[in-house]
Amino acid sequence: MVKLDTIISLAKRRGFVFQSSEIYGGLNGFWDYGPLGVELLNNIKQSWWKEMTYRDNIVGVDASIIMHPKTWVASGHVAQFSDPMIDNKTSKARYRADNLIEEFIQKLKNKNKTELAAEIEEKLEHAQVNEDYYNIILNYGITCPVSGSTDWTEVRNFNLMFKTFVGPVEDESGTVFLRPESAQGIFVNFKNVMDSSRMKPPFGIAQIGKAFRNEINTKNFLFRTREFEQMEMQFFIKPGAEKEWFEYWKEQRWNWYLSMGMKESSLKWKVHEKLAHYANYAVDIEFEFPFGFGEIEGIHSRTDFDLTSHTNHSGKKMEYVDTVNQDRYIPYVVETSGGVSRSFMAFLCNAYDEEKILENGKEDTRVVMRFNPKLAPITLAVFPLVNKDGMPEYAHQIYKDMQKFFRVQYDTSGAIGRRYRRQDEVGTPFCVTVDGQSLEDHTVTIRNRDSMLQDRISVSKIREYIQEKMY
Image (cartoon, one colour):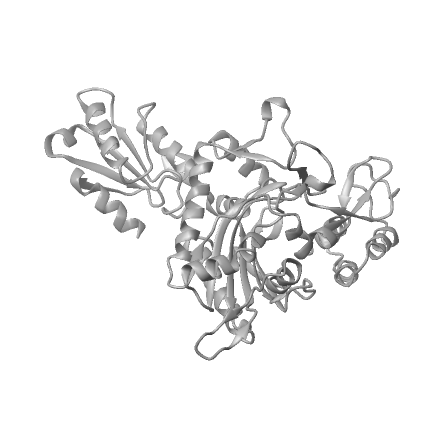
């Protein structure tokens, strides 16, 4: 298993991810995507968008980040969107109480104290109120990771929504929130989309967009951040059909990760025993990160909670009327909700590989990012074997021609082996090299990243070769 520090180091060194505002010391929980990172990020989103919306019965929206504040009253976020927070009086450090307990349980498991870990895990599963978390922390002597102290405050609620103001005066009348999830933008537009697109259940509405949560503790690189992006689809169905569609979308979403190169051994299902107030079925797809398994996508049957609640708070009917048989109902919803940044991190970890190779008679270690070619930030690299005899000009023309179809990089710096290594480390699946023969017969060598084998092909066949390998 690759170490998290290794992934973070590669991400910065190769231009995938940078700490936000790094020159000023950074801002905790915020990250910037570099030149390669934004390409990988966009490829993930484009693949998801095609998978979800290139269908007969799913369309897309792009809703505003700031919505009417009553939206969050109706959704329950104003009253209930909070985490249990606890402070250590000695270190002044602040923690999510449930996360603190979960990390303690993991430490016990690592020490093979499985019975005690299971005992605490069961109590955590049944914790309902802040006092339950507090009693677990005190009774089992859970210490502060910073100070080692058990001098804790009581557990209290901490609302996760970022608050701001609309208009020139900062008072309660102008209070709005940065959206903590993108789903509500879909629900409030349910009727608009259904009527304008002439859709009828079963149909879905998809969206990719930013969300913001003022997390108590951010951790594990991109896994828990305060600004993130979601890929969500809400599928509207007739009440009673939710189990069938829930199972359908479970299979669809699992298979998408596999089709994008995710190792099945690194994925698992987590079934929710304790359901959210709006759900009647819920599962997560979890990926094995360097720190353990963590959620990358949730599939939830949300019943009619959201549309009913918005009907009650807005006074506008969120229902479907079948004009043929006059059947009238508020649709149930099956949701698929994945994190873009978490998927990004999972694909980084999944792709990372080190292998021993022989080069010039010596054993060496090759670092290679085995991205699915559809996701790779750079599809093709083009090199002249040497920087003379017309090879750079010929290679550069190939580079310009292929730019019309793929993300291509041109590199003339260093020995050809070193250039291959640079491309391996960022996951480029194909490298074309122009040599002396190329100028004579218009053929080039094309190298496959994973096998390191080379084929000799006509320059006119480069695009066709790559497309066959990718699709």
